[in-house]
Length: 79
Image (cartoon, rainbow, N blue to C red):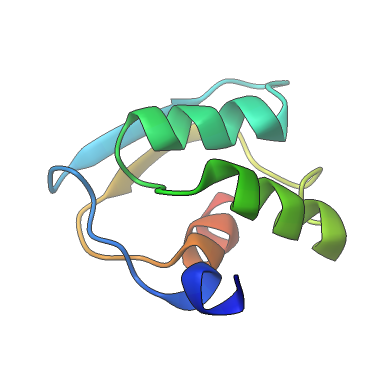
């Protein structure tokens, strides 16, 4: 699991934009990222973020994914 969280994954299509509305749960955010092709394992990132206490500090807004990024990198970008 640790390796999956730290292995960069290319977005389904470069320039993928994901909009995170204010007040959306982190579970919904990870599902949205999965649907957009940014995350392969949304439940794994959700569990890690909860364990790390980072699931409640996600910002709302538009996030663009142009290059490969690890799930942990996605979490850092959202904070």
